[in-house]
Length: 461
Image (cartoon, rainbow, N blue to C red; front, side):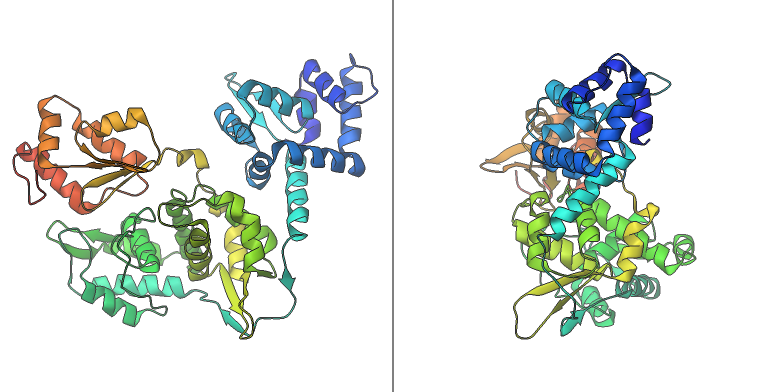
């Protein structure tokens, strides 16, 4: 809906509040006069610019997120959450936004309430943010001396991974990961090679982020999520021929777009504002843009994640992965330490397609813990009720800055003997986790439950 439609559907009291806020001289009891006066004011470029400045100052990051969102219709809980991030309480925040004329209350046929930001107002907000940001970023008109553009390499290497598994006998460790020799052979076959030496702490960025380098982990997790690769119970890795055939019948850009969608779904757990970051990049980086100045624009949307500082999240989880996916390229000159960033033509196509729409952020807000392969549960977001449920089948190991619980055979046995609901507990780990439950943990839990949790399986008691 556009502004004119929203005003026509609005109540007389809402129109009066908007007119008073805009300080309009009109007949306050004539709906027609109110609608026409408000439209005339907000369609006047000078008046609208003045209002945008006021809204920008009052709502800040909340307005930014609304401007960048592809939807303009929000549930009551969503809009309350967005407004709360600007420091407004629920009631006063909603009343203020409604009185300013950029948010409108609507009811559907079932009388369910939802809120609309008029499409033309949302576009004006987006254009205003883009104008402000363009004044802050540094750009260049010539090409950097050295450029890194991986194009379709991720897709080629995904096909190589699938062919490798299809043509060889790939054995898995007890935790369900490929042995290092397989990983090394894949690196020799891939167009883009990665170091297979991994830091000690790795979690949150996918199912196999514990075991493989970032790019390989993404390709492998995608193939697993699509049901193409199967981790068999006899510790072998195989390919489902039917799923593989279905995937290969898709166009190359469609395949890559699905990989990009998977990346955003996976990385949005540790980076909740990833969608906003990518939209900001899409609006600004159509030309060579200073990586440093682009990061400064996106920084308010980036938070540290465990051992990853905000700059690490930007460099390793956003920039590097977008380059791997062919969405962006980076460039630099020999005589300068500055890196330059640009969305590729392929990236513009992938990011502007409707198919790239993803579930909304609220889907991911509940991610609050990490289950590690060593049977420890790291609580990332304090939640007393959640921790009480975790403690039903685990014990508290550490209560420092991050609370850590440990799963043992005896803690599982204790929970079962007390009549606790194990399936509900496991579902909690799956739904609140920033990554799936590691395969070795899932298997051992099933074994303990099946035999009553009698033995320790070398984990200690």
